[in-house]
Image (cartoon, rainbow, N blue to C red):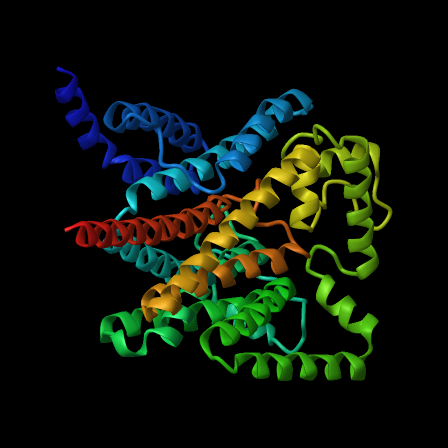
Amino acid sequence: MTQRIGSIARGLAAFEIWLVGLAVVASFVIDRALPVAVALAGLFWLIRWLAYGRPSQRTPADWAIFLLILMIPVTLWATALPEKTLPQVYRLLAGIALYYAIVNWANTLARLRWLEWALIAAGLLLAVIAPFSVQWSINKLSFFPDVIYSHFPLVVRDTVHPNVMAGSLIILLPLPLAWLLFTKERRSWPGSLLAALALLGMLAILMLTKSRGAWLALGAVLGVMVVLRWRRGWVVLAVMIFAASVVVYQLGFMPVLEALTTSSTVSTLEGRQEIWSRAIFMVQDFGFTGVGMGLFGDVADTMYPFFLASPGSVPHAHNLFLQIAVDLGIPGLIAWLTTLASISVSAWQVYRRGRVEGDRWLAALGAALVSSQVALTVHGLTDAVTWGMVKPAPLVWVLWGLAVAGLNLCVNERDSLQLEASRTVKG
């Protein structure tokens, strides 16, 4: 009887990634799908326990993620507006659910590759729908003629902010870029075509979003990718840094900083500094609990009013790290940073394993995931659109799940080889 239950549970466990993933995708349109995704994930954890005797595979970020989950009751207790906080809590839990679903499902090389191509295709899909779903910023950066945007009629009611689109694209863009740079000997024309279309499409939309934070992150991605791809890549990186330094020197540090930190919602450097100062005040006053997920704007307007912005016009801290600290307090920020560090190390190990073994595809995957973490970090210095309030926020957790799944495959393969070598020696 026990064996029969275990067999049924193993069969059901294979559907986790499809059902949870579908519910998370549906939440991009319908917020009510978020609790469904979380409930499904909880059910499948029980199913995996019955199937394999454990709720999930272990990952390097487990303790940090556990601390993040522990902060959820705290943020629900601290919030003054639970109707605003609860959807963001569900979004965080849905991202964590996707992370573990991917780690448990992508346990073969074929599945890992399938997931990578699914993310590349998702990037292309975002680039295709962006012209007709983004509320473009018209009066911003005059060297982009406004007439370009007149050809993009909006066809959806729930429009996307340009910075949100840019934040999603910049963390996906390293995947097709790395595949084209690293896998020259193993390319097929359908794969090359899809990767090239995705890369060109995402680059075009990134330019049209006029997101300076995303452009800065793109520069960082290109620099990291050059260093990881070519042995002498550091020379190119040094040249890039020198050229950027000359430009900054010629234009002046403050004008460049002003250009990089202003946006359609924050028109001056002083405005962004004011926003950051309010976030710092909140962290000082609510350091252990945070103010409640999603309440930066409400708390700022009530307790720390802006002088350079009208009430209700600043929904977040315009800095990923400050935003997480405001939402979940210092413990939540430490947990998130620890998770980021664990994932970055995992991605690096995947890259090194590919380099050592001469596996260009594995090296490409690792390089893409390392670059994605760099993009997330650099973009997060001036924006917070990959966390909490935005519907694509679980996308970060998908990439994190891909990194850990890749590391697990490397470790399992190494253990298998060591076991086989041990048996050969004994024989």
